[in-house]
Length: 204
Length: 85
Image 1 (cartoon, rainbow over the protein chains, first blue to last red):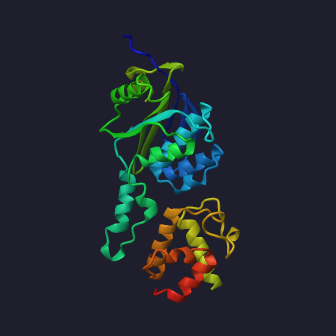
Image 2: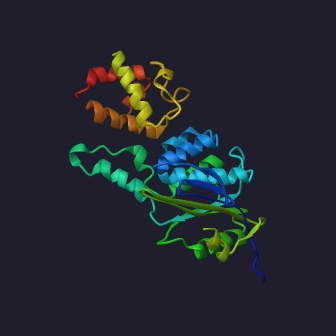
Image 3: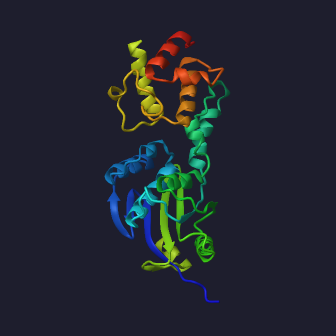
């Protein structure tokens, strides 16, 4: 049986104070940290979702990349769409885990913040994207030592081949202290870029 | 009491990351939850921690929170009566 071919319809990068969509820079700034960058970009793109400001850096990064990419795809928050999410990174939720640790390491000053604690799992980032865009299909978050296009490729193809979903939002969303990078792409039946390990690697 | 209310409004905005809300926009009797400031369950837990950390008040019965956190005014009344620091 011939294997089905899928395509990448859009992709988005957030790195080095720059946001690009399908390879074209759409926002750039001079921000000292990710929090400042994401806040400024939120304003720039006129996003209206106050819960954004309660998110940790990992969720902000993933949310923002997904927002830009899905808006470009015409995926509206008010519509239910059949899109799975498969994300990955290296640092898991370590950036927020450290903040939580800071709040509990002194037994004489032990005040864990519930608002921080709820983000001490990387897949909460997927939850924030899912809530925003009403995505109820499959989702997974994988932790790798480095970007793993082979795994993302085969996992997305598996979901599409078995008709678990119509499209898959895939990629890498990583935050570790001052270092951050997001690369999200949408895989489906149509699009200008062939969904292949080579192309995913090239775009990353 | 007025100073305490203003202090609470600032703390609520800062600690709950209410980016688009200013102190002037919060009335003393605005509901904190539901149609008012629209706080959620995690915010409620954050307020309980704030009472403990900043005012030395430990809520023994979480059900108490419903009345205490009705508004900035009810919070200020409770804190004024029960604070230990």
